[in-house]
Length: 104
Image (cartoon, rainbow, N blue to C red; front, side, top):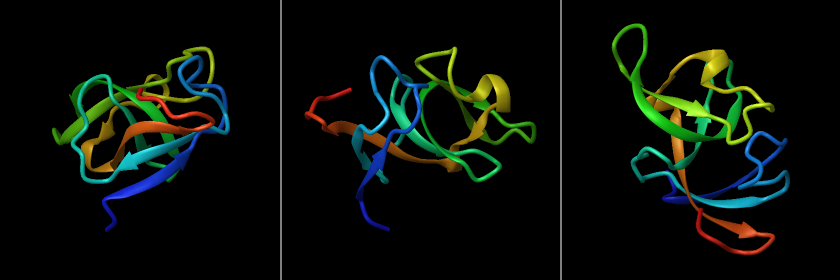
């Protein structure tokens, strides 16, 4: 697997930090930490950009993350779907690279 990749934000769930159309540089090898913006796969296969709020466990006791939207009035996150298995947090955002670069 590649070490680096790109993700594109859709929707308004991460405003004001991120907006629809923002492009993110992500690392597939970084380990998520509390506060990181991550790319995760929900159990239904949906890929989402969310903030890693805190470590949790799944029902079977496996490591997991509680993922939240920065804009709680928009989007779906762990409040709706529960903790996301740590193995399904597939990338950590390093920087927003478009429309203008900046660290998150």
